[in-house]
Image (cartoon, rainbow, N blue to C red):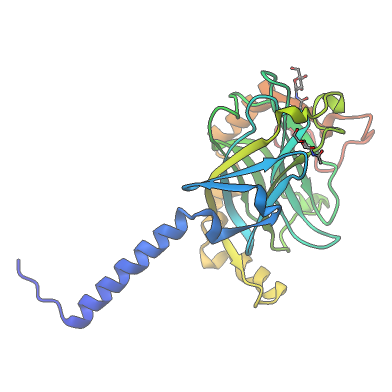
Length: 298
Ligand SMILES: *[C@@H]1O[C@H](CO)[C@@H](O)[C@H](O)[C@H]1NC(C)=O
Ligand SMILES: *[C@@H]1O[C@H](CO)[C@@H](O)[C@H](O)[C@H]1NC(C)=O
């Protein structure tokens, strides 16, 4: 079948092809398209698409996104410090600015050689945190890259490890619990010395003869509503919250875990949870309001 294309159509097709390629590249984005070092750039090294960030006795290191975002899903693949990582903390988190900030944290607490890392998660809403949970992992996070994600929409915030939900913070505004949905957040990671608390309650100190402590990153992916600084905060919230725009994260199926995901979360909590603020009656004689009887989604 012979098809004659008009020159303008050819130009259009070439243009669409270019756009498709461009979008793909952004999708599989490289570190420096989305992020920049924010602390100790001399502690960064690059191997192709892989970024290595080190902690030594001079400094830790950190990076942050160039832009701020609302909702969607942010994923980074991380390989944590191998061998002796006692005293070190590697964090991957999202945070807004200011005293009433919101924050979603993954903190990876190092350990002595052969002993397991712990993952601490926390959620700040309007400047208030104190919502720590800790769990062990079902794999050794220092041997390979694993993906760590934060899914965020107006109904829930879900922390995921290799797509398995490990924690859900459900919107309970109807029960008077504040939910983060009015502030754009940056995406951050850092590695630092926290040997005053991180490992076995601070009893095991960082052994600097084992420095540098290196965490590696790749697969940076931010699939979310970008909030340009040129646009007012209110306007960004309006744009990014408009369900009628058809953002995928506002689709009804994203408003809660699927049945399969609920089962995964129950399995994680039953087998790997080591601490949950919701059940810490010495800290909270009255359980915090978001910790209702449905603990598996606390
Ligand atoms: C850091 O460690 C190196 C090697 O162990 C040592 O030579 C150096 O003096 C230390 N620097 C500081 C600031 O402690
Ligand atoms: C380190 O290993 C010890 C012993 O297995 C364990 O009790 C602890 O929870 C692990 N993690 C941290 C961060 O201390």
